[in-house]
Amino acid sequence: MKQQSILPEEHYRELEALWLPFTANRDFIQSPRIIESASGFHYQTPDDRTILDSFSGLWTSGLGHCHPQIVKAVQEQVASLDYSMGFQAASSIAISAAEKLIELAPDGFTHAFFTNSGSESVDTALKIALGYHQLTGETQRTRFVGREKGYHGCNFGGTSVGGIPANREQFAAGLLANVDHLPHTLDHEHNAFTRGQPQWGEHLADKLEEIVSKQGAHNIAAV
Image (cartoon, rainbow, N blue to C red):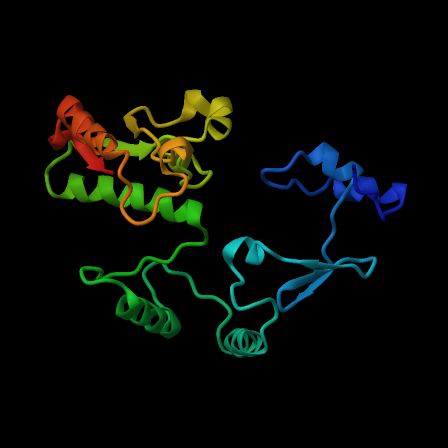
């Protein structure tokens, strides 16, 4: 059943100004879901309904919305320094955040590169891999290995190494060509109730070796 719009007809044109990602926008305009405010783990709608945010703000609000300590920290930071570019200059708060992030990271992680989203992070990682091999003289390392049904963001690089057909089919002509995909490991028939290391699926690990043997390890930039 479609949700009835709480907005008058004249507001439909205003809704058309905004395009939403991964959304059937025409359907949204006819039956919009509008969020007015949030507190803790709940959203509030313009008609005073309370909705549980089971996505945690698409995994960005694990501590709850409008957490007083977070609000206070953001307000204090904006009052001190709202933004500084990262080209040829760095802010003291960014340096401090990078140091703390490295302290939490596993051994071997010694640098932090901040991005605006997961999609941007994946594309940046792909470029870092290519750039590294260019600088070390292995310029032939241009291939990537992703996974079927895997999601690595919705930018061109992430979509290329990702394996969700619906995300790829409209953009196939523009995706990266040098990408191989491992088979997906999820198999409900064999592993639906498996605990610990599954007894089925060991053969899937051989697929990576097959790709490496076929393409040549010296040609692969990252997996």
